Image (cartoon, rainbow, N blue to C red; front, side, top):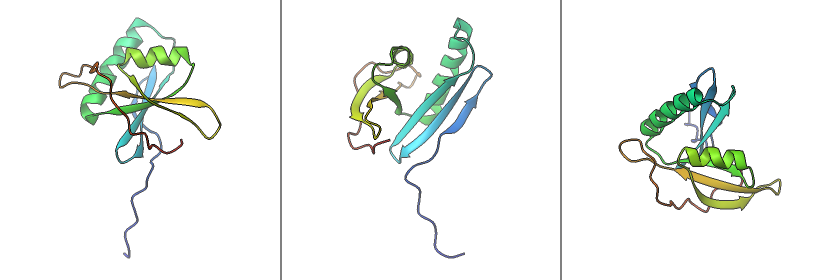
Length: 128
């Protein structure tokens, strides 16, 4: 039916885990950079944390990693959330709205446990 369309450089956030308490999304920013997003819909509790941790571990294993997360510098609650799920700082930049932003990276071993070493993200990510 004519020429094939080129692959898009960026895909929108796609919900990949939908639960009553939270939704996990993946966003393919570049062919080599998959970002994860999480919306929590209910009050945080130990039960919600256990369920989210289980889904997060499964998603990491299925994806094969690494996964990246965008973080606005100074957001302490989000920083705690990122650390809880094994993310580590990888890069900083100023976005088009002049906000100081960070990119964090998560990786896991073959058992689904987060690796503790520092990873280097590609410094050439487009301004988001």
